[in-house]
Length: 171
Ligand code: X6L
Ligand code: MG
Ligand code: MG
Image (tube, rainbow, N blue to C red; front, top):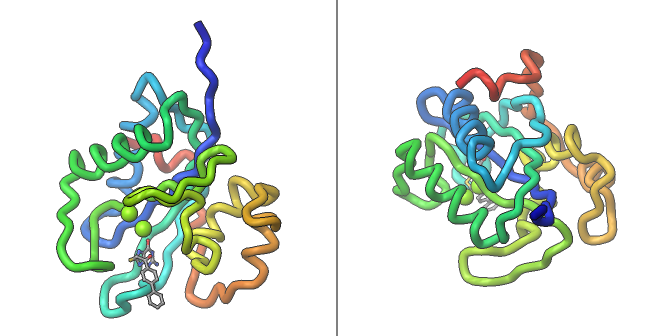
C-alpha cells in the first residue's frame, strides 16, 4: 500500500536560547515520524523582529516536507513538536524558542479556525519568502512565483547564514 504524499512547506523560526538547535531538533523529530519526511531545508537566516520589534533578532528557515498526513494532522504534529521543545505561549508575537507554521500544503486552500493555508500573511514577510525562495523559487502562490513575490519586498536586515547546508541534521 502506497499512500499519496503531499508536498508541504513549513516556516520555522525562533529567538530565545539556541534557536538553530531547536529548529534542527524540530525537523529531526518530523523526519523521524513515519508519516512525514524532510525533503529540502533552506539555509538559516538572521532576521529583524517583525510585529513586536523590541525583542531579539530571529533565526528563520523553510523546509519542504513530503507527508501522507492531512493538513490538520500536520498542524497537530507541528504543535506537538513545539510543545516537546518547551515552547511557552506568552504574549502575542513575543519571543519563542521555536515556531513552526504551515505555509503551503499541496494545492489546498484552507480557511478554518487555527488553520489558514496558504499562510495569509506570508507574502509580505521577507523572513518567510527569502528562505522559501531558496527551496522553491518557482512555486506559484496566488498567481505569482515565490521569486516574483520576493522581488517586491524590502530585504533590509535579512542575512543568509552561509554554513553547513545540513545544519538541521546535527541533532
Ligand atoms: C504591523 C503589525 C506589521 C504587525 C506587521 C508581522 C505581526 C509579523 C506579527 C505585523 C506583524 C508577525 C517572527 C517575527 C514574529 C519570525 C521574524 C509575526 C508573528 N515571528 N519576526 N515576528 N521572524 N523576523 O519568525 O510573524 S511574531
Ligand atoms: Mg510564525
Ligand atoms: Mg505559529
